[in-house]
Image 1 (cartoon, rainbow, N blue to C red):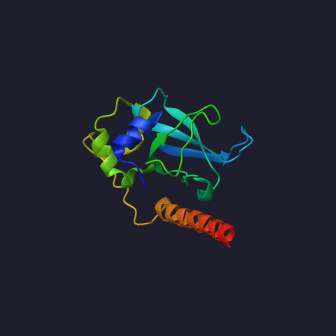
Image 2 (image 1 turned 60 degrees about the horizontal axis):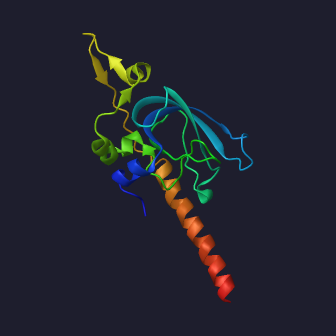
Image 3 (image 1 turned 90 degrees about the vertical axis):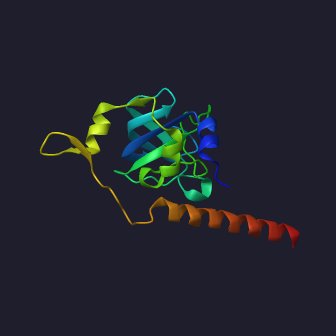
Length: 165
């Protein structure tokens, strides 16, 4: 079961929005996975700069989150000695376009980065900034999340059945 925005905030090392600029295999640890570089736009929790690298498992069966280069996410980061900054499928990380409940709960960020916020805005003829509408009807990572959880459930059920038989 997914945690509430309040639980997600309190359990996380950092919470921020950022645009994915790079996705590469993680060779820094023996566990592998993927390393994602994000250009940070807003920060609600954590001491992070305008760019951050996070790690996630290589697939949803191992609780890896599927990031897409160029997309902007609300990211909930965990931290421990094995993986300094990691994102899990079980966190509240999601596309910003799908994170309105969290954004409403989080309120005003503690820090915003000028470079990133101006890239998400467009200048009108009178020089005032206006938001671009980045609406998308594609299902994105959420549909892959469901598939990963289903596969994990089926694998567990298979193991239980084999042990019982």
